[in-house]
Length: 188
Image (cartoon, rainbow, N blue to C red; front, side, top):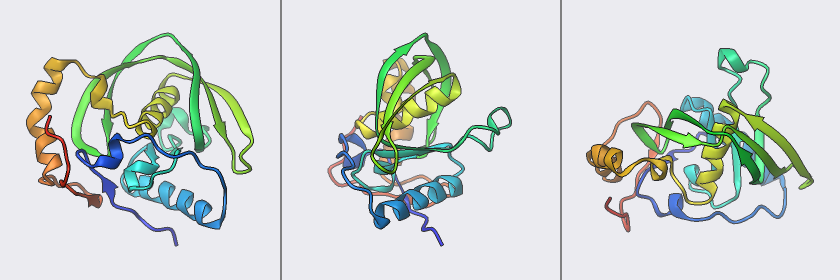
């Protein structure tokens, strides 16, 4: 039975660190991936990166197949992912399991060329566009210590400052488990 991890929250140091590359695939890593998919599903997310479950590894999972427009989209396990090129632009509302109840309009490239490793650490190159590209970019940002709020204009950050401070202090409720730790957190 997969394990459901608590989700790390805004203010935790691990969300601001660049993750360590994955260099070996072993049974524990496979279990971690299963747990990530399970945790994401239980939190009603479409993507989750390892730092969001307090794990310092360059891996993220994405599954948007529960959405009507993406029923045929195969779930992705992105090991050591990197965007090698991008084009176009679109603005869409984003949210994050680590920053509950906060949303904002984020501009991102509309099309990306993505490089990542499979479970044999072979390199895969693929192209994504639209919503799948956005979700993957959001998760790769997590692996580089970047949060979606870092893409918001200063005026919007001022508007959500109170909510961010409540999250940082652990004064937030969700229908999924949170990992809250305010030691060494940064005030916005």
